[in-house]
Length: 383
Image (cartoon, rainbow, N blue to C red; front, top):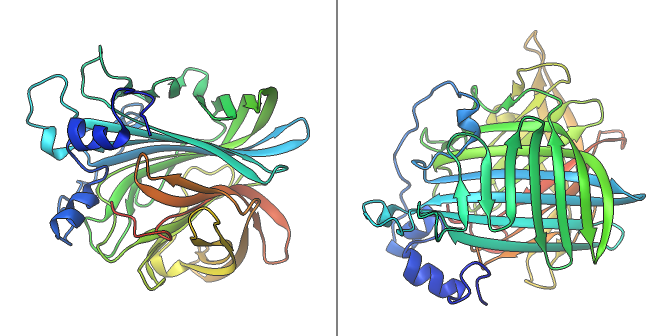
């Protein structure tokens, strides 16, 4: 397959020759036979904005992740746009302005609920610093990421997101309605049993989304809600982790729920976490690993890849009130459309499931919508 950004090179040639590096740091460890993770421990610090809304090129991996649900002419849609940045260690000492010191990947998708289908596309390019040849960039000053004609930028009125692919396109304005939600310990989120398995991580839930969605040549005016995650790390996953299950849910009352677990190859939870923020508050309640329990209740098998995914979950979350008395709340997460698998082997190298889902309380009442993401089911995720 030809790269749309470098038409003279196939993606395989682009990675093997021009970039001379794996997509993610974990791939280098797998290729060398090493099972150890980098030991770089990020120093705890207060996040500073707008600087930390931008890129952190000294960190190994980073992503900006926008997901949401849209209504257009009585039809329901989901959308996602994710930009990934990966630091290429082997090129950092090169003096040439053309050296591929950073890679930018992007995934975009639209879920057509009525049509029970997922439309998606992927891209990859280098960001070396040679502006005359690069078609990708990520500002370190504020959120401003571009890859060809795909982009995510922050302006005075809010965020702007645009992307297009076979059969779909969207241009959306995303307006903040709540303050930033700092995940973990004031933005430093633990991702494993070892101290270095952590990331800087913040979210922007309850974004108001509006704009245009183009589907099969038809342009629709759309409105809805969205969620933004921004995360960067030196070492995210423990060697025993093969992937994760994650939810980010905008609740109908304005609250926001995040829950995740990292899985071992046996399907057991290696580490869990997340947060709950009540509408009107700034600081979230942060969950301990033992507070979050995922249990799959329904499965779907992909005809395209043969991979089986849990597409409905029971999620038990133990919350602690101001008095410290714990209480367990049980939620049901259900995929709106089962077929929301993304095959990104032409960019980040992974096959994963990510899609629009609904959140129900223990009485079966619909209380929120958001996205469910599941990685490592087709093959272990290497990060």
